[in-house]
Image 1 (cartoon, rainbow, N blue to C red):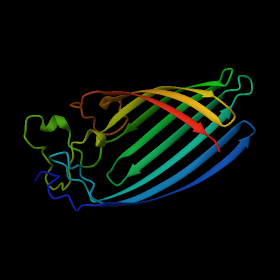
Image 2 (image 1 turned 90 degrees about the vertical axis):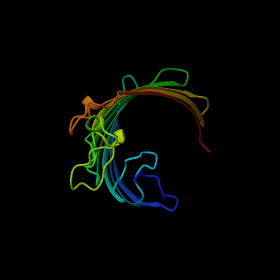
Image 3 (image 1 turned 30 degrees about the vertical axis):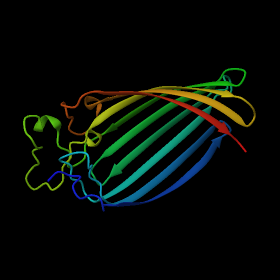
Length: 213
């Protein structure tokens, strides 16, 4: 039966918590550790997909560590972070972030960034290649749930970016950020790669104004 029929009264509830520890190691080094957990229950299927049936609960655990190091010579700061993600859908994901913030002059700052992300597929993900010639995805016998949502497939992604900030006053900063995102199934470091998925690319621009009061 197509999902999306009779979902008017469906709901979803999520309870989440986060604990963190920040420690200053040296005048130039600071570290942070965060542990998060969330429990969700309710409607998780995608109503816009014909064959999409997901569990009605989802538990998520995340661990993140950050390290910032300031260089006295060039007055720049390197920011490194690693995040591990796991959930009850069977997804395990890793994110590695690197960024370098360099003041130039006259209140200008530039910050290039690079991010790598990889995940395996959900336990109930059905590869698009396996249903290319059929009207419905072939759900394995005895498997209750299924989805062809590529966001729950195994894939890897690279993000390149640059942020430019201008200090307008002691209390006001203006910034522009550009990011380019590339996603490929064969960049996944674990899981079963779905070779039928098309490459995905995106780019974004952000403009911000920060005021301190």
